[in-house]
Image (cartoon, rainbow, N blue to C red; front, side, top):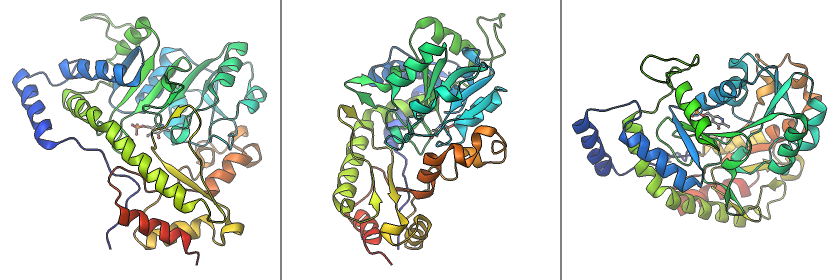
Length: 369
Ligand SMILES: *Cc1c(COP(=O)(O)O)cnc(C)c1O
């Protein structure tokens, strides 16, 4: 029985990649803002409909760097329902993370609970468009404006997501992306920071190159997070086929929704009106009482049959040893996030799932025993 994995990386055509590698070998320029790096930044700005982007070597360093660039300190309000890198980036800057519960309708931070978490030390909000579902950005911005806070979106899941034809990546002060192998669009490892103006891009480009502003001038304690030419070339090729991959994922989502709509105790989200989704994940939520099995029983049953779903995002970040002592990490403070983390399974979702794969997954969920 073949294994069905939760995801499968989008890979460029090997011959085409080889041709670009030949160009790199001929040029003998393999990193440090080479021509493929420039071409990929340009191509991504156009594809994503954003004014400025800066490429990074992964999706965690843009989070850390955005906080540095904006000189964020004190406390940052964030969500426990995410991948650990979100909160780690705050911690790595010596900032205290303050967890706020989520809105069960989006999975993102609940704007109605943000104000109560603001203290004189609060300087920023770091929400996550979890699973690529847009946060309630207008309400978050209104609170940030009222209290003079910055907003940095962890948009690692939101590649290509648009609301009414406008990129979600244009929200807040900056947005970060991850191009890790498991994401909708990948450069093997990689990431980016999206910003609104040329000066900010300049500053970010200094910071990701040790703070160098010229041959002999260092303007800040920067880091090394430059993307090399090989991965930039790979990224250019993947960008050409990402729409096709997203459409294939869309078809998988349609099939899951049709098949699972009437299964008692299993719920999932439909598309949001006016939103261009990227179908990066397909989370389902298991109500143990109504379904007749717990989430973990279903998860392990799927696994026994070679179907490798993932319990993203369980356990909550706030339960890990580094963070669980924080007052905001208390379970009573995070009832919605706790419930979602205990009910979720992300079903296999990628561009190569076959009809047979989907039949097998759906059948396993529909027969409850
Ligand atoms: C993947 C991911 C990251 C980190 O990206 P890497 O490229 O793996 O460093 C950050 N935040 C979220 C929400 C992610 O899913």
